[in-house]
Image 1: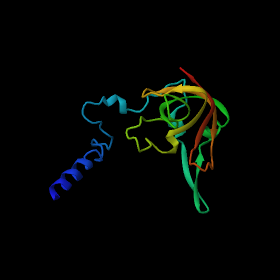
Image 2 (image 1 turned 30 degrees about the vertical axis):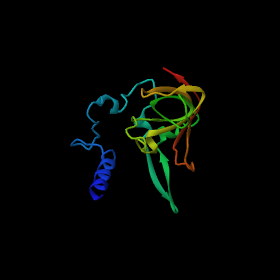
Image 3 (image 1 turned 135 degrees about the vertical axis):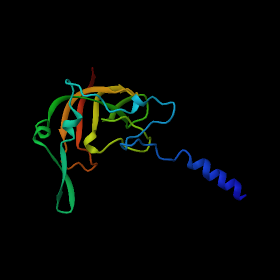
Image 4 (image 1 turned 90 degrees about the horizontal axis):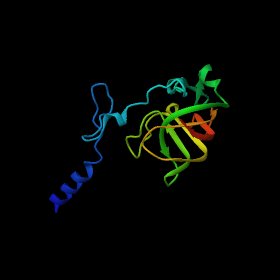
Length: 162
């Protein structure tokens, strides 16, 4: 009986093991998985830079922390921008009108691939097909200083673009 319980515990623990990391602390994909799937997006001149969106600091305000955006980021509030990222669906089905774009691909079904500065909530006018490849959407960017969900950036009236 004990041997069966030990085998079962071992079998259940195998999938829960942490991903391997290289010497730089970067995640290494499991054997047989293309490492290119886990690389961050290459910078494109025609889309909003994730490096720019990362220009935010948390500052203490009384009993909580709030984001303080750089002047360059704050200037984007209510402007139409183009964002490229990996889709994290928030709805069921292949077509999504409400989703999150991330600077990094998702490597775990239970984890977000970055902090709030690496995520943009998207509300699309028309459904966008979910996939593992990066998508590009254009819409009106809102810089959120005190959103109760912890989101820093929201893109509304978004449409898929190239």
